[in-house]
Image (cartoon, rainbow, N blue to C red; front, side):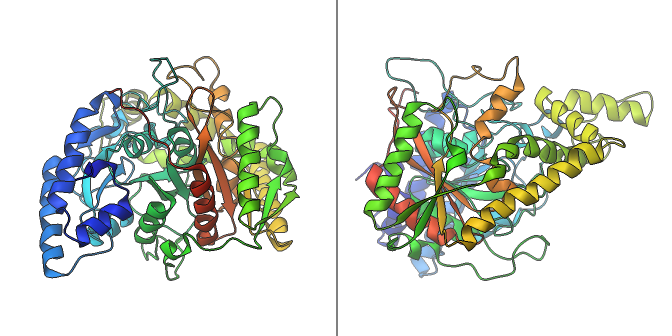
Length: 491
């Protein structure tokens, strides 16, 4: 029998239907793989007993002919999603022992469809970071290594644990959240597929909030087809989230393999950055050729306000974070550090509970929202956000169906290599991804090749609002041309 952990989600689904193996066997194989790979620090909480119990229930439903769309599929969940009775910390000291009494909408829909929980994956604290180095539980190490080097590499962030778990075959898929690139950048760094859906396509209820107008949940998977299968279960209307679209969810898997002939693909000229590595430019050109060969038409487009996206994002996101994180006060739940009075309790708890990057962003956010600075910073950033959105709308109105860009400005870098003295150096990793969040659009990162050091490089496809199906069709073209990439196990 093929090693069960090397299967794609679609293959595992088919194998379970044919009874080639049981959900219990599939779960046990992944539980064993997770235990062997603790050096990666991809999981902050393993739930082997829960996995075995859920797999038994799946086997019973399969035997009765009542299997759901994800019946028996072992998944990992980013530690930003509340899971009833299972510790959820956002990888922060301030929530170190928080056990929710309720289930996020996304995870409840995955369990409704028969999925099995393997555990909670590591992420940057409150999803704030691009390298998974700000987690209270320590950094995640990528399953990838440079040729002839043992230097530990970052899997990207903030959803680095989910990306590493999928790349290292420690689950068949995982959930992530994307506020400025936190699904697409780790996917590109680890040779996995990650999609950030249109804002409002997936419910945010029960997800620990970072920046409410930017956050969106999406899946990590080994293949484009697997990502499409997962997104169908994750997406859908939710009366508990007023920003969630009340519309039926398409069968995204049907779009995989669909012809892309005649589609107009925009190539934004502003994404050609000074000093961009030749390998990124080369893989971008290769992607254009693959889409052209599949019958798509390539056109150069302009998104003139792209250059302002990163600074505008780093005003809007911290402003919303400072508001959302005000609830962590040491009074109602989470960490409590006693003080002389209530104000001292707040100050002591937050100083002790939040890490350096979270404190930095809360202070920036408080500053840009304060009297005298609101108009100069926050209001201007929101106006820029409107202009960034209009740039995309103008291209789509001109007949462009999607855009092709690099996913990241480089391949994965070493743990601790960036951002130590200058946090802006780390923020620049989001240069290709933040526009998508600012405009509320869907974006997918698909593995496109390896660099000279043998590390994965990804391409990003940006779509029209609520047109994830076109992204899956285009992503499949890239995947079929580039092939799949898996790391050599060193752990």
